[in-house]
Length: 329
Image (cartoon, rainbow, N blue to C red; front, side):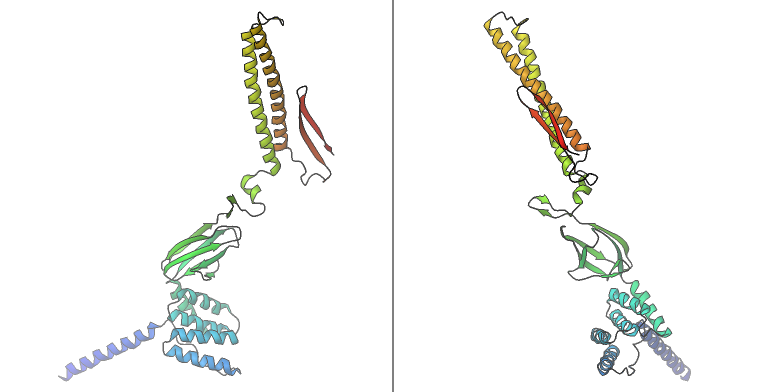
């Protein structure tokens, strides 16, 4: 009987020891240090109240008090206390940010024991969060998570597990929204390219964007238009030329002599069509050539002084077709 009682008592002792050990491991770290007088009564009072809330397990209240104390007297130790409180309330992304800052801050730096506790809590927090390396175009765009400023550390967006709405905005660009489902230990690259905003049916772009997107200057676009007009004129000339030859063949006139009045009329129509064809072909050649010049030869650029310019002007009439060149050099 005594042997059985001793075995029961021994088993109870083991169970109690395991419970005590497990309770000690429930938290990633010990509570922040006891308050030492700092010469600032308000700071000391806030720390004392924060420690009391922390020991009671009121993590949100403790964190709020530690944050107020940090505003009065910022240091690595208050950052650590905020980070530990964030860890306990399961705000792991914020815990990573505060604990990382605590480990590098030189204002009242952490002791060796405090550093070990902070590093341990930081390691555990990193195992609970998702990290996204952001690649956003254009640079300088504003990023919001659920309409709030995100936690970005070393270029990475830190998120606790859950579903979020990512918003990216920039002047002159359309608002972009992305849904993100963050998972623990996720480490991904997130690329977002904003689209230029449209204004009255046209795309609004930043200065210099036209050249970057199209590669063509205003002068080159004018050259394309002039060249296109030349091509059209050449086409018209070709049509009238074919018509003139056809009517001349039908007229059957030789050396200005026509067999009848109908042939004379056809011959006159052929001459008129021929004149139109000649003018259109010359004009088309001139316009096409001017378009090529405007496209390939820059005028009024940075290489030329402002008083240098070249003017290319077609000259058309019933008696003359050509191009006039002029300007200052």
